[in-house]
Length: 636
Image 1 (cartoon, rainbow, N blue to C red):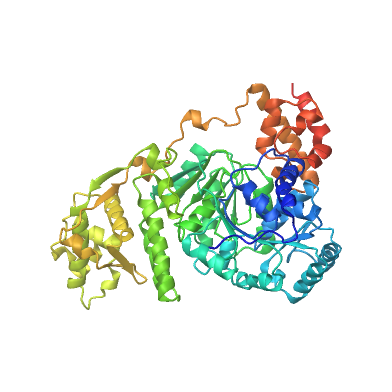
Image 2 (image 1 turned 60 degrees about the vertical axis):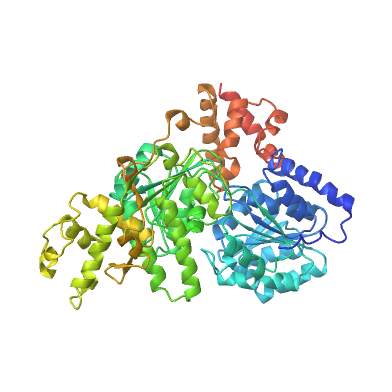
C-alpha cells in the first residue's frame, strides 16, 4: 500500500491543523466525550482533511465515530453530505436514531421506507439539509441515486463516502456481498471525494482484496489492536451441548442479554424452546421466519433487558446493543473471521463479557465436508481449508486462546489470563499409541471392506470396534475378526471421540460422503510408522462440562457503585426505560449504562456538572438534563 492520498487540495495547511481541534469540539459538544480512543483521533483528522483511509478496528472499538465526526466537521465547513454505504438495515436504523438524539440531521434510504418517505428524504438530501445519509450498496449504485449524487457533486455538496463492513467486497472474506463489487464506481465517478472503508475483520487476503477492489491503493491504512480484553474466550468439548449452554447461562449470565448461534433453523427453534422451557427469556431468529416476526424479535432484543436471541448468522450484523453479556456458539463457525465478528457482539460497552463455544467431532466433519462438497474452485477451497484449519487449531489449543486469535490477524501478544486455557491449563497426554490404533482401525476397514459397502464405517463404528463392542453392525461385517478389535478397550467412548476429533482437526484423518466415512490422509502414514509424537488435549470435567468460572471479585460489577449509588443507578434505568418507550428507541440510545453509572456515582447537582459526565453532549443535556438531575436529587 502506498502513501496516503493528499488531503483536499484547496484545504490550507493551517485549516488542516485546526481540523483536530474542530473534531475534538464535535466530539465534546455532540457526543459528550472529552477524548478520542486509540487511533480514532488520527483517523478523524486524516479523513476530515480529505484523505482516504482504510480502517481495521474491532467491533466495539468506535469505528462509527471515525466517519461520523469527520462528516460533521466537513458539513460545518460547507462540504455537504456524507454517504454511508452499509448492507445492514438494523445498523442504519440504530445509528440514524442515535444521531437524531444527538441533534445531527441524518437519514437512511432502504426497503423499509414507503415511497412518500423515500421522496421526502431525497428532497432533504438535495436541499443539503442532511449531514449523513445511510444507504445499501445496491441503492447507492442505482442510476437514479447516482444522478442525485452527480447533482450534489456539481454543487460541491458531496463530502465523503464511508464504506462500512468493507470486508463484504472480498470473495476471500467470510461475508462476501456481490453488490459491493460495484463500489469502485464511486472513485471513478467522483475522484475528488474522499473515502473511508471500515471493517472489524480482515486477514491479509481480505485486506488486499479490499484495497484492490475499492481502488484504495492511495488510502492510508489504520490498523488498531484486534484485542477485546474484556471478552473471555471459552471453548468446551460437546457433552449434551444444550445442557451445557443452559448451565453456562444459569451459572454465569442469569438475567443478562446474550446471543446464541446455531447452524440450522431447526436447531435455532429447538434451542430457543429449550431455554424458554427452563425459564430463560429466549427468542428464535432465522431467515425462515417471516419478515414481521424477525423485525419484532429483533426490536424486542434491542429494547428489552435480559433477552437471549437464538439465531443463525442471519442475525447480529449491525446490532449496536452495547450490553450483550455473552455470545455462545452451539456449532463451529466457518473460520476465525466469522468467529471473531460474531463474538465481538458481546461487551461492546467495554464491561466483562463471555465468548463461549461447544465444539465436537461432528462440527469438524461437517465443516470439512461443506468445503469439499462445495462448487467453488480449487484455489478457493484450499484457502477455506486453511481458514478452517486455523479455527480448529484455536479450538484444540492448549495455550492462550487470545494469543492464537490475535496472531491470526498478525498481532503479537502475551498470554491474557482471561481465557479458559489461561485460567485452568488443560491436561495433555501422549496419544501417539491411541492415534496409531485408530488409524490402523481405519486401514483395516479399507482392507476388509472391499466391496462390502465400507461407506458405512464412520467414527461411531470405529470406536465400537476399538473398544471391542459386539454390536449387530460389527457382527454383520465380521469386524470382530479384525486385529484391531478390542485393542482400545482401555479408553472410554468420550476419550476416543476426542482422539478422532483431533486427528481430523490435525489432518491425519478425513471424513467422506454422507455417512462421514473415515479415510486416511497422506500425513497419517508418518503417524502409523511412529515417526510423529502426538500430544493431544485430554478432556477434563471442566472442559467437557461447565465453563471456567469467573472469580467472585471479577464477577463483581465493574461499575464500582456503593449501595446508595446502586439505588440511584436503578432509578436512572427506570427513568431511561420510560423515555425510550416514549421515543420508540432502544434504551441505550438515550444513555449507555456506563453513562448512567457515572451519573449515579458522581451525583452531579448542576447542569454544568452533568455536562462533565461522559456521553452527555449539548443536545442530550438540553433534552434530558433537568429530568436526570431531578431523578438524582430524589435518589437520596
